Image (spheres, rainbow, N blue to C red):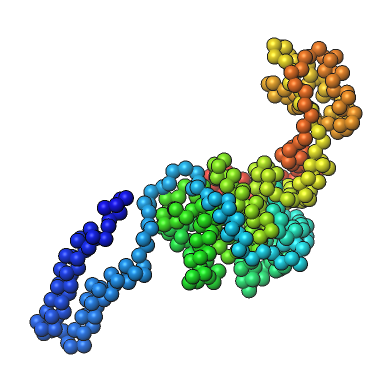
Length: 438
């Protein structure tokens, strides 16, 4: 035995005696069938002889040379949130061989007045107009219940729009000819897979559903497993995967057909920080290879990998555009003031003095600092320090910073009171008796 595996000599010593015994028993069974059993007719004897021969000879040979899975691993759950990802250069090499987007395609997703309404006046999506550039990574943001998942279900053909039109990769949604399914990939927010299947088997199944077969299917599955970092775990049962590994497998099945548009609903929600980093790097490398339409509530991830964002609130589009332009247009500077320690009441004095200023849009406090959101930075900058001096508070730190996408998101959502007057009713509230409450 070498490195935990049997060498050929040991295998021969173990197998040959049993093979000889099995062959002898098979010959005796066939002889006894023809010579001794008078109750069986001649043609039936021949059939039984073939069955015995197949079970004892042909069947094991087919198992050895065709159906055996040499790399099956243990079927216990793999600890940790995610399996190791493939090296960056390996992923880049694979993706460069995939077909790139058509150069003359301007928009991958276009919606015009897209609306989804349910019974009793419930509107989940209200006249959505979007234009997602081809090859971009598009962040689709919104609080829970904003209508993000409804939008993805409409664009992927899983639901029918009440009004409006949309095209994905130039294909109108709502068609039943299968063109849309062949050109998109989709990862649900909570992917569910057959727990008894192995990772490679699941990707094989999805590939076959997309019309792949033979060497092409095997090659594509191998590529996808390498991209999502599941090559070593591909022969384990999905039921033994951790949550992060199942999420990686979900991204893999969405990539199996080399989609032109990839829809991801909360793709990193169940991953640990390292797994999130790896998946975001994979998504980033898809830029120019596919258009990625990513719904998420993790704003730092959007700011890291996305080119453009759209913010949805109560089924209405609040704003849409390149991230840099949104930050420049809506993100006024934030002034952070940190008082020196051992000054009782310094935070309260600073906050009180700054809150009454006409240029101070909002003042937030923490146990150690004061943050001032301003409307007019040209006026606020020179005015803050004299106010601090007048309050008698000594500062340890005074800093002007640029707001994050999260600050812009919270401001824009808060500035749409007309969208908050009507409570959202597309998702029912559940009572203690299990019945939906409106």
